[in-house]
Structure formats: C-alpha cells, structure tokens
Amino acid sequence: MSSIEKPAAERSFEPHLSQIRAASEWLNDVGAALHIPLGALNRLNVCLNEAMANVLDHGGEGGHAAPLRLFISVEIIQPSAGAATLTLCDSGKKFNPTTFTPAPLPKSLDDALPGGLGIILIRGNANTVTYSYSGGTNQLAMTVVWQES
Image (tube, rainbow, N blue to C red; front, side, top):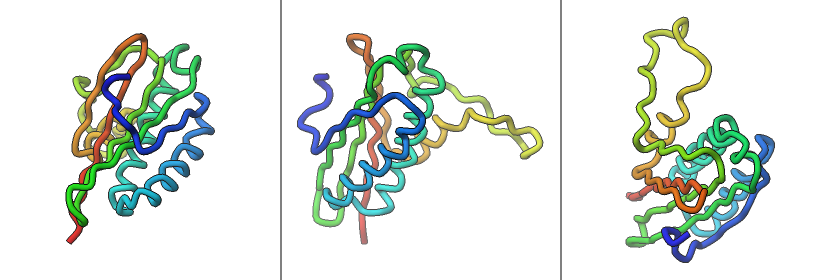
C-alpha cells in the first residue's frame, strides 16, 4: 500500500451493492469535515459509485471475497483551491481502467445498451485517474481538483 500515504480517512465496506450508499454517506461526512467543496465532493461521489459498482459487477470472486477499502486524502493548495484523492482497493480481477477503451457511445437511446458508462463517468468527473496492482490488490485513485472563485 505504498502509494497511499497518510490518508485523512479510511474505511472498509463489505463487498455488496447495498454498501455503495453507505460508502457514499461516509464520503459525504468525511468530505464535509475536510471542507471539500460540494461540487468536488459530488464528482468524487460519481467516481466512488461507478468504481464500486464495476468491482462488484465485474471483479469476479475476488471482488466479493474481501472488504473494499476506501482512502481519502486532501491537499489544500490555497484557501480556495485544492485536490482530493479517493482510492478504492479491491481484490477483484486485475483490471486497469486507465488503459481500457470503452465502446463508442450510441448515436441514439434506441441503440443504447445497459452498462458500459462507468469508466467514462469516472474519467469525466476525475481530473486524474491512476491505477496500480500489487499483491493481488487493485488500487484505483481518482483525484478531483477544485478552484473556487
């Protein structure tokens, strides 16, 4: 876990879809305590929801075998600017979403199939997404940067 240094908060959740809401509530509470602006916190929540759902839907047996661990760290650059990084660690199948190429978006709703937008939503809401795999653990770090005027 060398890539996660001194998180401001951390917590584990059971690997069940029902825990996504609890994880989101935890993120909201921690975010408020760390003074993360609401817009940035909402973007982190989209990333959290999509990342957890992807692990639980596609991580295989390993994705359901061990608790999902969340870490959050915050860097305040100046009073009105900062960055928050949410890291999700799981024991699911090795999968690097930073190199995955999603299918093209459908031209209409009639052509749309369920699913397949999670990585697009994560990339669209996070300023930076990094991935590492070590000791059987996926580590997905999603960073949101803010600048308040």
